[in-house]
Image 1: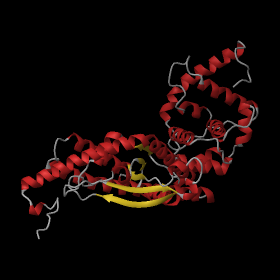
Image 2: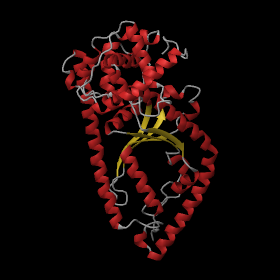
Image 3: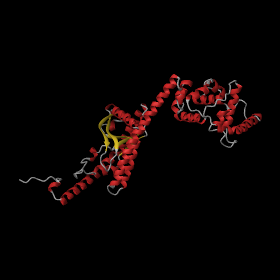
Image 4: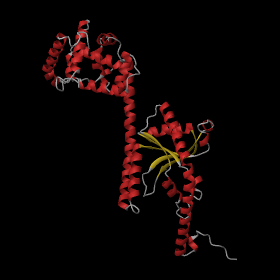
Length: 410
């Protein structure tokens, strides 16, 4: 009895017949892929909604845990991309996806890009907590054609507790993909994919080798960025400790974070202040010549911020406005001369110096002493602007004499 030769057992058929069998299978895979595309197209809108629901859950959960990411994006798989994937063959020449609609799991997908390696771990913890993880794969390719590709891929479903809610029931038991990678890993993958896509054939060996070398550099850069972030966090923590105990402030550099901690302790926390505002004010202090918080403390020590704010504006001001007004009282006209908004343009267009001069006058009238504090690195070159300040004083006096502004106005 003669046994039948398996269709794809190319060891027992001629090379010509084997090529024919593979060609037939490729055509059959294309046919099934097109049929699957039509079926998937009917459900693609559902997968778009599914992807958006996953993205929404992830955004809310990451925000609740103060996990900062570069980006979170979602999509339903493009029809052409789905059909190309559905038509893929295995290295043996058989269909990779005999049932594409059921076997292709990334019809709905979310991609999360982080800045640091540690954040990848934070995001992964949230995924494990918030979804049913069907499969997890950390992809690190050893394939010379894709050497250096790194990403963590999850296949997930909504948890039963969430899937029973009315807005999620239609996604019940459907699987989606979540990718997590750093911004450097993402950049490498996108550029490598673009060059592969534009290549009419396999990339030349030299190009593959250069990609491999670059992938190694990116791994080193990712680790170095993580080390920098770790050290920065350690410095911030030490600065906050020194501010809290009130010692060694001369060793605390002026940053947005250290300034916030310092002002929260001295003036009370103010949730209305934005991160940008602290960055701007820290930059202002550096422009004024301050280099550490000991100098800032020396400048503001003898002034009551609440009283000064009320005298200057008539009511209690926000934390940073009170702080800047105290600096104005402490430094006097030296504050105006070095301020980045003051005395750098045509006198007739700059209102800010006159505003500050009016506040100084009001503080003097209420008995607040106006100091002349200058930090060690005060930019003495700005003293050449003093003549321009005299112009503002005269103009202010003229406007008051003419009644154009009230003597009490700010």
